[in-house]
Length: 186
Ligand code: IMP
Ligand code: MG
Image (spheres, rainbow, N blue to C red):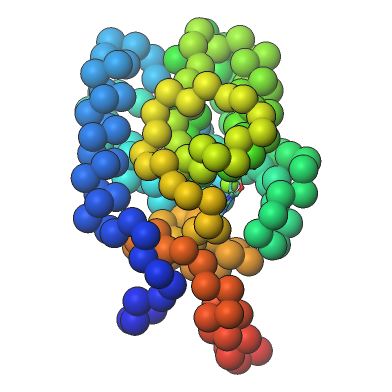
């Protein structure tokens, strides 16, 4: 995508700076511990890849795919585990990395599910927090940016599974997005 798509909300440079700060903080907090970072797919994959490269202690990584939204822009109210962790997390220091927390349903569900696997500690890190929309209380330990309630895309976040590849975060313009999606060859 050559042209700027959507209305940029957080620039590539702002993201880079903030991810570096989060990495520095996590590095200091987990010094000398056995950190397992869990990437929540699909949305967190871009953030996760940048974040781990800003952490300067040994970490192991694992992946979980969950879905709480259908193809649209509002939650279906249920969380489904599409693929689970590949390793046990018992007695490990676990950090869950997610793209965005909206109602809090996904993270509160993940927190409960992973806590039952008896890790030594468990913390949450999100790139974006839509604080005003919270319905399910979840303690979040690391937050990239607090944003308003608009639906956002880019840097891993999708609309209809597209636009994850934008290098910045933009507010979705549904009309513009639909036009782009509908004008592709089939
Ligand atoms: P929650 O369970 O209501 O907190 O919703 C969190 C999940 O919904 C995230 O993992 C995202 O996949 C998705 N989501 C929420 N808001 C947005 C958004 O603005 N853009 C893209 N995905 C979003
Ligand atoms: Mg997600």
